[in-house]
Image: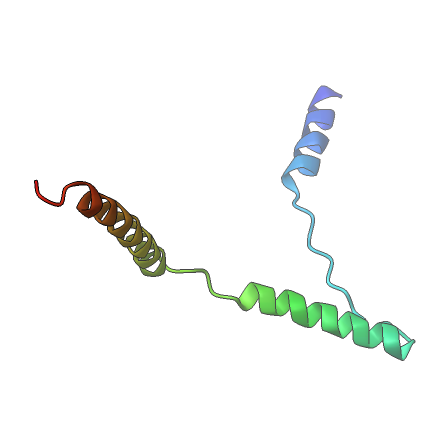
Length: 83
Protein backbone atom coordinates (compact mmCIF):
# COMPACT_ATOMS: atom_id res chain seq x y z
CA UNK A 1 0.00 0.00 0.00
CA UNK A 2 2.85 2.40 0.80
CA UNK A 3 4.56 1.57 -2.46
CA UNK A 4 1.39 2.43 -4.37
CA UNK A 5 0.98 5.76 -2.57
CA UNK A 6 4.65 6.70 -3.15
CA UNK A 7 4.32 5.78 -6.82
CA UNK A 8 1.21 7.91 -7.22
CA UNK A 9 2.85 10.80 -5.36
CA UNK A 10 5.86 10.59 -7.66
CA UNK A 11 3.66 10.61 -10.72
CA UNK A 12 1.75 13.66 -9.54
CA UNK A 13 4.89 15.60 -8.67
CA UNK A 14 6.83 14.52 -11.73
CA UNK A 15 4.17 15.31 -14.28
CA UNK A 16 4.46 18.90 -15.41
CA UNK A 17 1.19 20.51 -16.39
CA UNK A 18 1.03 21.28 -20.11
CA UNK A 19 0.36 24.92 -20.90
CA UNK A 20 -3.19 25.46 -21.96
CA UNK A 21 -3.35 26.60 -25.56
CA UNK A 22 -6.43 28.59 -26.23
CA UNK A 23 -8.32 27.39 -29.30
CA UNK A 24 -9.71 30.59 -30.77
CA UNK A 25 -11.30 29.02 -33.80
CA UNK A 26 -13.91 27.30 -31.63
CA UNK A 27 -15.19 30.57 -30.11
CA UNK A 28 -18.51 31.43 -31.77
CA UNK A 29 -18.78 35.16 -31.01
CA UNK A 30 -16.66 37.16 -33.45
CA UNK A 31 -15.48 39.89 -31.01
CA UNK A 32 -14.41 37.30 -28.46
CA UNK A 33 -12.67 35.23 -31.13
CA UNK A 34 -10.75 38.27 -32.44
CA UNK A 35 -9.76 39.21 -28.88
CA UNK A 36 -8.48 35.66 -28.43
CA UNK A 37 -6.38 35.94 -31.59
CA UNK A 38 -4.95 39.27 -30.39
CA UNK A 39 -3.97 37.73 -27.04
CA UNK A 40 -2.22 34.90 -28.83
CA UNK A 41 -0.34 37.35 -31.07
CA UNK A 42 0.87 39.29 -28.02
CA UNK A 43 2.06 36.11 -26.30
CA UNK A 44 3.83 34.95 -29.44
CA UNK A 45 5.51 38.32 -29.92
CA UNK A 46 6.68 38.28 -26.29
CA UNK A 47 8.23 34.84 -26.79
CA UNK A 48 9.93 35.91 -30.02
CA UNK A 49 11.47 39.00 -28.46
CA UNK A 50 15.23 38.36 -28.38
CA UNK A 51 17.06 38.38 -25.10
CA UNK A 52 19.74 41.05 -24.79
CA UNK A 53 23.09 39.51 -25.57
CA UNK A 54 26.09 39.63 -23.28
CA UNK A 55 27.76 42.13 -25.63
CA UNK A 56 24.82 44.51 -25.36
CA UNK A 57 24.83 44.31 -21.57
CA UNK A 58 28.61 44.77 -21.46
CA UNK A 59 28.42 47.84 -23.70
CA UNK A 60 25.67 49.34 -21.56
CA UNK A 61 27.68 48.84 -18.37
CA UNK A 62 30.79 50.33 -20.02
CA UNK A 63 28.77 53.38 -21.13
CA UNK A 64 27.45 53.84 -17.60
CA UNK A 65 30.94 53.51 -16.09
CA UNK A 66 32.32 56.11 -18.52
CA UNK A 67 29.56 58.55 -17.58
CA UNK A 68 30.32 58.05 -13.89
CA UNK A 69 34.06 58.47 -14.53
CA UNK A 70 33.43 61.69 -16.42
CA UNK A 71 31.47 63.08 -13.46
CA UNK A 72 34.33 62.20 -11.10
CA UNK A 73 36.95 63.73 -13.44
CA UNK A 74 34.95 66.97 -13.67
CA UNK A 75 34.74 67.22 -9.91
CA UNK A 76 38.49 66.56 -9.54
CA UNK A 77 39.37 69.21 -12.13
CA UNK A 78 37.32 71.71 -10.15
CA UNK A 79 39.13 70.85 -6.90
CA UNK A 80 42.75 70.54 -8.02
CA UNK A 81 43.35 73.26 -10.58
CA UNK A 82 46.91 74.02 -9.63
CA UNK A 83 47.98 70.75 -8.00
